[in-house]
Length: 235
Image (cartoon, rainbow, N blue to C red):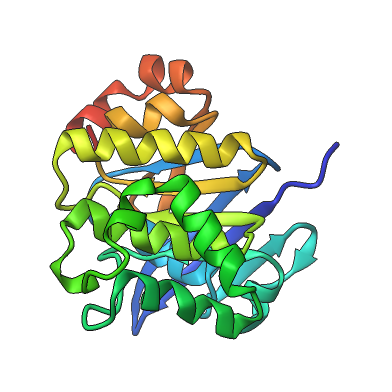
């Protein structure tokens, strides 16, 4: 059996006395897109914080490409190939598009390679390269955040609420890019409150509720067996 790119085993996490994750089990196979769905409060963002090293779990195991990383920090995880695009896009608004991209070179990636990756995937950013990032549309800011992540050549890409605050046509465009990134061999875990668009690009789906993964399967299986959960809070 192939080693998954990400394996989460019986993961627990809490804020003070409030347990938010209650034994999460999740696998992201190499080269696959896994959509993590569920309503607000299901524990999706807390899971991402644990996987990305921003929060320490109280119990359980995390493996990245077969390496145990339950206590690893964000820097170590980045060196192992994990890259996160957080909710809210997180660009530097007072720097131009190109200045935002050049910052990636400080992590050891050649500047020309960074710009080539960004402009190949998102030609619109080339047109906006001298524009302040804070004046871009929400969709363009998300493109900039994604292009910075891709320049690091990730093995596993975490997308947290990619669609938040964006128009449906923009979301469609971004998820077309997600599908192209996955086709290049990058494993992707995308966290979405809204299921419809994520289901179109996902190879597998996991549904969270109450701090647990309560169902997993291929998109058609989830549509058939988890309609109440998805449509009740995540569609």
